[in-house]
Length: 454
Image (cartoon, rainbow, N blue to C red; front, side):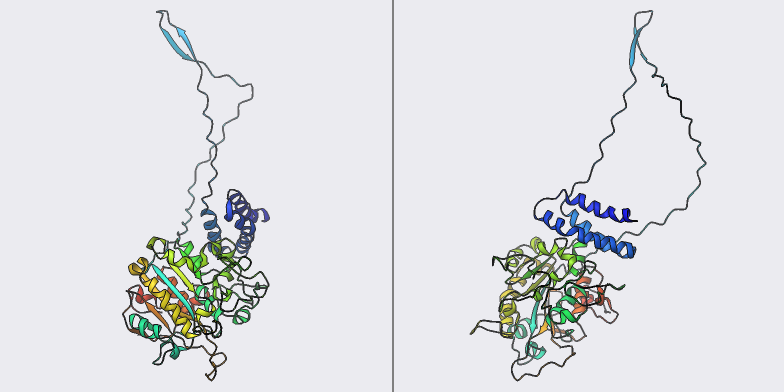
C-alpha cells in the first residue's frame, strides 16, 4: 500500500527534476506538499481525488515536461548469405543454416482455449467546459456604503448610480453574508462559508487546524489558509483551459516596496496593511493552498497596473478578471489621505477611472460582462445606524454588458454564493461548496440565453 501511494510522489519528483527557473523553485518547495495531500485524499476517498490530481497534472504539463521515450529495439541480424557456384558457372546465393544452440530446447507452452471476458464499461470522459455568449468576465469588488447610499435617490456614488446604473441591470436583492469583507470575497470565489477567523478578516494569517471537507467540498473548522483540497473558481477555470488574473491595486513586496505578485503575510503572522494601501484581506486568492502550492497565485495574482496592458488586445485579456482597489479606493472609511475623497466618494472615483477603460476594451465590446459588486459594509459614519449583528446587509450589485437590457432590474435574492455560482456557470462550470446549495440563485441563465433559474 505504501509503495503504491509513493508512486505519484516519485512521478512528481521526476517531472520537477526537468524544470528550470522560478517554476522549479515553486514545485520543489511545494509540489510534494500538494502531491502528498492528493495521495492522502486518494487513499481515503478515491472518488474525490480527480480534481486534485488534475491540478498537479496541469501544473506540471504547463512546463512542457518531455515524456520519457523508450529506446528503439535493435534490429535482429539478418541471416548470413554464402555465394555458391553452379556447374554452369553462375553464382547462386544460399542462406547459411542458423547455428544450433547447445542449450536444451524449451517446449512450447500449451495454449489454453480463449474464453470471452465480459467487457468492463468504459469510464465516461469528463466533458470540456464551454463558455456561453459571455467569454470575458470582469469583477470589481468594493466596500459598500449601504444600498441607498450606493443606488438610492441621494446616492453618495453618483457615477455608479446615475451614469452606470442606466446602462445595465441592477441586482437590487444582492446581500452580503455579513459586514466583514474577507468572508464575502472568499465565498464569491470558492463558495466556502464564513468561519470565526475569516469573520475577523484574518488579522492573523493562520492555517486551518484539523480541517475536513464534507461531500459538498465545504471545509469545517476555523482558519484562514484553506487546505489544497478546497478548490476555487480560479482552479476550475484553469482546469477548463480558461485564463484568469486577479489585479490588486498597490500590491508590492513589503521588503523592497516594488510591485510583486501574490503578496501575503508570513505564515501565522499578523496582517498589518499600510494606511490606505494593499491589504491581503482584499485578495481572496492568497488564502488557498490549491493556488499557492502549485504556482498559480504567483503567476496570475498581480498588481493592478498590469490591467491596462492586458486590456489592449482581446487575446491578452483573461477570461476572468478580479479587480480590487486599495483600502482607500475600495471605499473603506478613514483610509484616505487628509483632504482626499474618502469612503463612498473614493470608491466612486475608482469606478470613474477604470470602468471606461474596461468597457472600451476589445474583449468587453466583443463578449464581456462587468460586475460591480461589494464584499463588505463600510463602517457607518457618525450618526448613521449601525448594522444589526448577524443581519445580511443589502448592498446591491450592477451588471454591465451588451447582453443585458439597459436600465433593467432583478429583485431576486442573491449573495456572494450566487456570484461564485453565476460566474462559474457562464463558463460551463459547476458551483463550488456552499454555492451549490439548492436555495442559491444564479443570474447566469439570462446571460446564457436561457429561461428561468434555480
